[in-house]
Length: 163
Image (cartoon, rainbow, N blue to C red; front, side, top):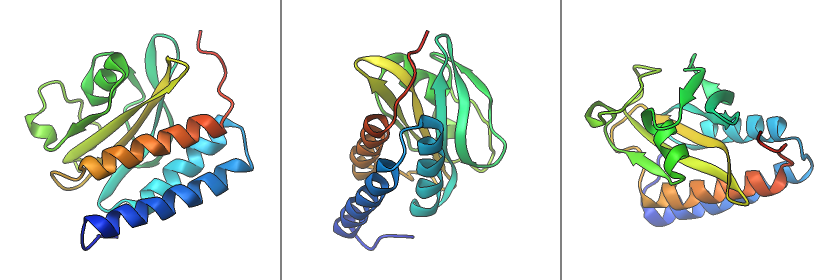
């Protein structure tokens, strides 16, 4: 789905967040919720080639539920967009992955990327990683709303304590 303007995009995200909340309310298992969230994001966001989660195991990020092609299975903190987002605990938006020095290429179709850290009480749970097949696939509206997506997933799921 492509949006005609920023207002239409904001309204689409509002509806998406309401639908996500409704779907996740019935389940507390994080794997089930991460799987449904990645499926919903894959359908919702235009030009998506990967929508999924990497979970923090106490030392590195391990591939979790996702939609897309075969992907990297383990990412060290500080490596690639996911590792930087996790280490710095901040959202990272990359408009052109070819111009990102520390980029890890898991899928040649990916041209831009956004990664949002998943935090609970200050502890890193993992990251939401989304890749697009176009450059500049994500903007401030995506960042703001994908951060809300992560908040919903974390609040509706019962994550185990990270070692």
